[in-house]
Every structure is written in structure tokens, then in C-alpha cells.
Length: 203
Image (cartoon, rainbow, N blue to C red; front, side):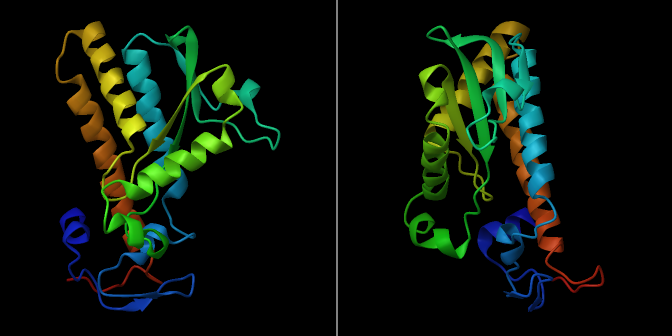
């Protein structure tokens, strides 16, 4: 499934998604469908990995901190309980834009991680108030893998700190691999979710 999506090959017979949209033979629609089966679980799994990595680096952190709500009640995905850098605690928020979404193709076809960088900027604007007191990091990971620059730098630094704590130089590679596996598995679930029932035809 991951290879087929990457190469743009035919993965299924054309059909209609439960949302009413037409799905072509490449099956890309499921990744961007607003009725996707895996949006919430994918988001939760990635946040779990980040929190576990912080704890592995001996940096206590909590998810969805109650005291950091914006005026509309929305909260970032997590915050460290001790300073991350420059005397500030880190707060982060994850988003997964679809590389192949029609609204993104004009940019992603020309520039790598274009969708991730755009999503990252929107997150920074959304949580601009928090940036005054916290070191905010938007982590935008596209469905085909590219990560925004700030998010990648954060994950690399997190991997380095895990290595300091555990002595294993492979910590960063393992973290990126775990996140990649989550994205690929959820892509497969989203693809399957674009069928009206489980009796579908794939190539």
C-alpha cells in the first residue's frame, strides 16, 4: 500500500466513497476524506510516541494540558513539565496534511514538504499567544512522509536527548521509523475506509 501510494499506481477499481465523492483507481481520496476512519487514532498515536520519547529522554510531559486552552477552548497536544530550552517549557501540536489532496497538489508537486510547511505556519498563528511563555513547536507530517523543518529539528533534538539518556545512538532513527509506520498504517486504514463495504477489489 505504501509503495503504491508513493508511485501513484492503480490500487483499486474506481468507486464511490461513503462521503459521496468519486474515488479513482489510485485510491488517494481516502487520505484526505473528512470522514476518514483514522484521523483521530493517527493523531493520538503520534502524540503518544512523542510523549513516550520525551519520557525516555527523562523529560516529563503531559498531553492536552488543561491550563493552556486558547480563548476558544482548544488546547495544544502536549507540554513538557520542565524547561526544554531558553528557560521555557516546550508545547507542541501535531497535524497530518495530505500530500496528495487536491488543495495541496499545486504546491507539493513543485516543492517537497510544501503542505507540511503551510500547515506548520497555520499552527503557529493558531497558538501565537502561547509562544510568549512557551517554546511552541508545530509538528506537521504529510501522509507521504515529509516533515516540516521545525518539526524535524525537534524530533532530531529529541532523538539526541534520548541517546544521551540511554546511550543508544539509534534512538532518533527508531523514533522516526515508529512515526513513519504509524503514518503508513493509517494511510492503509484510510484507503480501506473509502469503500462502501469490506468486499472491495484491489490490484
